[in-house]
Image (cartoon, rainbow, N blue to C red):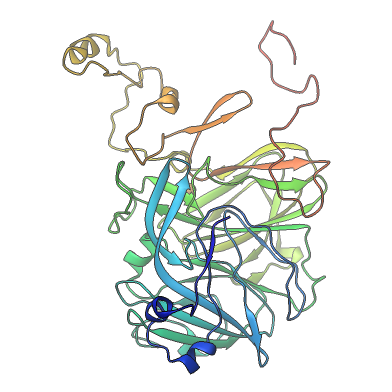
Length: 427
Ligand SMILES: [Cu+2]
């Protein structure tokens, strides 16, 4: 775990945090920095009122300090390096060392104070998407506040009145700043920890990047043709599995801060949409689904009983969103006999490979330029998975311990329960 704590240790930290006098410095809480992309299981709340913490997929929750009845957080908007999956790193903007920034978890009626320090080369703000708050705390640059200049710290204060699920993101040069990865999750837990209680509660954001193979900085003006479709700025096989104990009541909350909608699909179970960013859906108004569309700027909380053990795929149902670094202006070659042309090309480019005549499955093993990812990757117990992007696996095991989120490995199927080749051996 690479966890860098930097705060007020010396001149560098002081310059980095902008102009703060020593007296002021003591009034700002420490900003924890996390630069890796491992899912950090939630610690129990050290103080304040009790709640059941969420698990941020490939992410973490921000620590806070209690000061005179206020729950204080410190976010630092700054450039970060994010590993999207092993083999590819992206130069992004985020908060406290990561993109997305840390999840903020508070309890209904908490008085919350957030210090936001801007270490970006341009101004920013933070908008607290979905919150009930004084208008002047809404974070819309030019409308409710001046933008936060580079090097300065602004303070947001409001009471977390409505329990539920929220997001945060800049409302200043949004196109650039969100295309660069600036966003985070926010959960306001109910006062009564038994209310809406589940056994496992996962959160992540849907986002996307357009990064040319071989480079690392996203193209910020892309509107639709992104080539890396990410969950919490990770692509499969870099997205951690969602690990559950058989019989658990499981909630997955995902918010969409990308530029298009994502039909999120779970295998092997039905779920209900139990919450949106507008609040909890009354039980009488819910209906069963196996796919739910999450539109741009929306959050959906889904819940299901993890009754079936196994490795269940969980992914966006748009085929192109479960691919990595895919070029979309490539002609379809299915059924095209490329042998004659390939023979000619090989005379000029000796390692030329004609691909796609039978489909594109062979892309999974293709050689790629530096700092990019194959379109489809990941290996499972039965071979290449041929997926990338917005894909992971819900791993349900009878013997997973409560509170244990570690990867149990691949599912061991009961004898005779796997699809088999006709006239082959039934495993
Ligand atoms: Cu999608």
